[in-house]
Image (cartoon, rainbow, N blue to C red):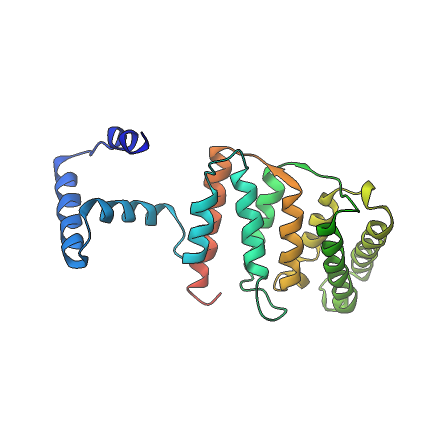
Length: 229
C-alpha cells in the first residue's frame, strides 16, 4: 500500500527531468549492479537523512515508529545515549547545543522523578559527578562572581534535594541546570548520559514542524563532524 501511495504521488515536473532521472539511475545501476529502483530509493533516502551511518540508522528506525511511541523523544534519547558511549570521559561529539534548545522549545511536559526507580538512582549518581565538576571548575567561567556562586549553589542544592526528596522534583530543573552550565559540561560523556535519562522523562510535540526541525538540526550537526568540529 505504501509503495502504491509513493508511486501515485511521484509526478515528474517535466519530460527533461524524467529523462535525466531515468538515465542517471540507469548509469548508476549498471555501474554498481543494482536495480534502477534501488538507486532511486537510495538517492531519496540519502537526501532525507544525515550522512553519518550510525545517526542515519537512529533517525530512520525511530522518526516514524510503527508503535505509538513518540519518535521525536526516542531519537533524542538515543542520540544522547550514543554520544555518551565512549571509552573515556569525553563525549563523541560536542556540538549538541541546538538539540538542547530544541528540547526546551518542543517539550510538552516534564515528569516528576521517582526515587525508587533504579534508572533514577543511576542518573542521580551521574548528576552528582556533574555537580562536582561544576564546583571544581567554576572559576574558569567568564562571569561575575555573584552569578558563578548562584549557579554553583543551585546545582548543589538541586542535587542535595534530589537525594532526599526526589518525588518533589521535575526533570525540568536538571535540564535547565545542564543548559546553564553548558560551557563546562558540553564535551563530557556523563552529561549525555544524564540528558538521555532526562529526555526519557519528558514528552515532546509529535508534529511535522517538530520532526522537520529536529532532522534539520541533526543533519547540520553531523555535517560539522566532517570538518573535525
